[in-house]
Length: 592
Image (cartoon, rainbow, N blue to C red):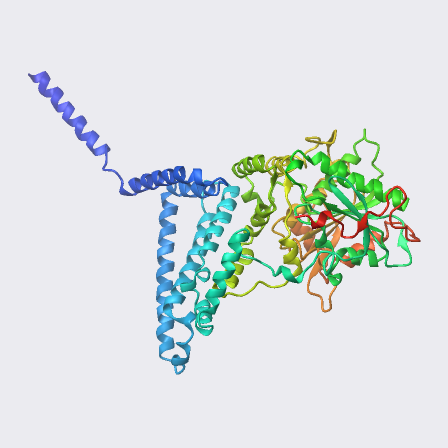
């Protein structure tokens, strides 16, 4: 009995100890676990409807919050405090206004009424708070934060109060002033867009004609194959430099971004400075071209263009210019030509890159769109179509700047019932082209996902491994401060990858306006230019350069003129081997 009593006592003591150690569940911990489960369940439900993987980084941010309850609690406390201060401020301003002498006049301004002001202030407060919380999240990589910031901005841009009639006081005023005509016209605009591609129209296309008031610099198509037409431009000077300039534009859009209206034409400016100019006009691929590869773009594009230009001008070398993805292809071509087993390293005398990436480690906001999930989704679509549709590409580019390129036109066209403007650059931007399946898959995977172009001999094109470090020809490289497609600090990486001298230029403005940047008086933009230096960070390089007013065009023309040989009589247009086939702008540029 004694033994039983002693053991019962010991058991009781152990039970008491266990009860003391086993505390009641922590409510905060329970909430944390519940929140974590909700995040995972929500993600599993959304994933099948999210082929682009947009919710993945947001899920990772949310899960990181569940693992750091202190940060989550502080974030919610900060939000509560900010929203309280905002509520007090809005109502206090309204009451103060009511007590002023002009209160009756002020009341007529709908935007200042508490209803509208509170919604606007709430939206702005929440947007800033969310961006701050994402950036300060612990336990996730910077890439996850960048992606989560990008996709959260997409959602927040769509939720902006001005996008909706009853929360846009200006749209309500327009409705009243026009007696409802603004919404009637807006509905008609919406119906018209639904018959097109569902996106708000950005430009009045009726005011432009390719070959009429656009792409009208005089020239001839002097060569055509299944992928390119090569245009040779008529001289505008009595003498020209003996080395021709061959331009490789992007094939994501059409070449005439470089030949808009005469005063803005990059090509016309170059011809008027005494250069013999050739430009590639890419064919708009069809389903039958689905097997067209990057090898084909290299051999049928720049390599063939160099051959034809040299033959017509009777020059041993050319100067090559590449723009955006055309520049990426040109850099690949330069490495291909300089391979020791090739023997064609002297084909290009020197070269120019315009807002071009060759190192895709940090490709800007496009890096948030291009992921393994999105590429797989796109490849599935291309397997059915044979190409990536130009509308898909255009909508992707518009999504990088949703406020300015989507919702601005949504408000203008639908809530105000107005027509879009007549702007040549926007007309070009909407003149979309297709991407052949094989080439596009290669480009997205090998450049964006795997970043193999910048690695020595990791990528093979047309029979030769590519190493940018073999390039020794002088380079002029242009970047743009506000470029969201090819960020200038990433463009600067070219200084670390080639072994020839580099003159690097940084211009204000963005991916298009930084290149289509004609001289104007007074100057609208400015630039920095100097020798590239791989030992300097981009910001250090910029700090060492003098900021100059105006466009970089004259600086480039001076650099180019020293390298394109003596002044000679202009060559004839075409030759017996390459006769003129059509007037510029040719036929490929007109394909839809």
